[in-house]
Image (cartoon, helix red, strand yellow):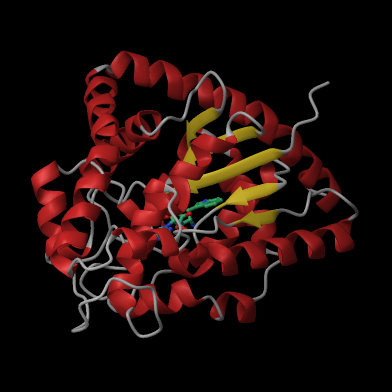
Length: 329
Ligand code: ATP
Ligand code: LTN
């Protein structure tokens, strides 16, 4: 009877989640819980590809887990765990690295962007990061991977690695499909609407963090960079307004036409305030639940310990098969 498709996704504990993470990824994860067999992971091993303070990483990991629950991931329905608690990820990583080409990894745009951003620490982990991610997905024989648009290239590489392994050693891995939402798959920076909103942006006004208070959220939206037109409409070249309309649409479910009609005759100021208020009101319950979960360390520990046990029992089976196929066992 249990014939649900399997979903896996992950998020890095590199800081509190942004509105981009929420709209592009985590919010979709909560919706998928009813229909699919879902596994969600805090990708703390990915986080150390960029220099992290150890105590801060530990704290951010625990907070990110609490935030997942606050966003609506239910540990009774889904498996929610922390990547480093399941050693299978590190082990499969090596096997898959030996089926991945240098040239393929060199083409990853995230690697190029992150090495430009951290020119003094272009470490091998940053380069091989997509292999670790492929392992995360393949260990669970995942059918679908809900991510924002920026991860599509990594998903394609995962499929290539899986297909190559299956051809070389015999069928083992399920070939996963990306699951990218229609609205909000790429939420842009509020200060530079041509680049993606990212947790690690140096400009705090560029990002809405989902735990921020209402006044801060509204203030950031009011300061969002837009164009010199005055009319709220979705059009080419109006990247700032297009981004705000996308955010508003993702939260309210309204179409672009409906939004244009709603703000017909009103200026950008009114629109920005409305977007800010709507987003802040939508996120208020997440903030309240986060306060509750993060104050209950015993509950969090219980959830992530059980989550890791369940995750490992699935992953271990795939890893053992991979070792046998390759001749390591
Ligand atoms: P970092 O700044 O540390 O690279 P990030 O904000 O890009 O982090 P990740 O942990 O890499 O976040 O991503 C978690 C999920 O959020 C991924 O599925 C990713 O595609 C999605 N995501 C990240 N930023 C956005 C965005 N601006 N719009 C839509 N989805 C996003
Ligand atoms: N690489 C992703 C986070 C991530 C992930 C995964 C997403 C790690 N492992 C497995 C989907 C499936 C990122 O940086 N956004």
